[in-house]
Image 1 (tube, one colour):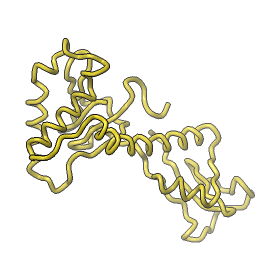
Image 2 (spheres, helix red, strand yellow; image 1 turned 180 degrees about the vertical axis):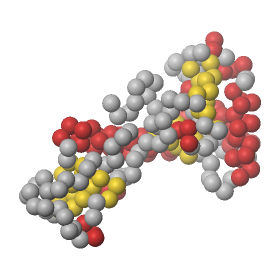
Image 3 (cartoon, one colour; image 1 turned 135 degrees about the vertical axis):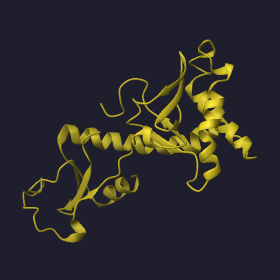
Image 4 (cartoon, one colour; image 1 turned 180 degrees about the horizontal axis):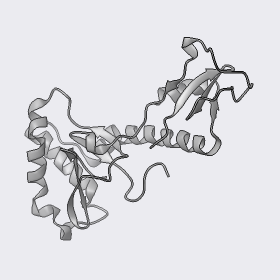
Length: 205
């Protein structure tokens, strides 16, 4: 994603854009010399480069990108399971929704993650002929690995529904809102929201 979403305040409205104009799109007044509290702010990008994320569950479309599942990462490589078996991709996951799975202070697990994932990926259950798009797929691969890690830590396993609702849905909803805003800016250059609506939008990012 090349464009960065920016928000600034003018005419008692919050105005979203990619580039702050010289004049307000509502009243035409010059935007130079704004007060510090009205200075433009960047809206956090909902997507990350998956090759830079450690110990994470990554989501992206099977084809194309979010703006025009899968699994995790080590040393710049994303593991995922498709019809041809376990893939180890070092490119192609530059625009993803990311669900972090490990706390930064869990050093022992982070250090062992690569080994666990590689051993897990060589099991016969993940051979190409075992793949089935509806129930033995990339999502199954990811969740099974996550539950193996939880068991090794003497923690309770997660059902598919629980993992989806607790970890995946909040991130994908946030990404969906960002996509809507981004596409609107691509179409009309500006998105203008009143006070309450703007607070709701900003809180979602």
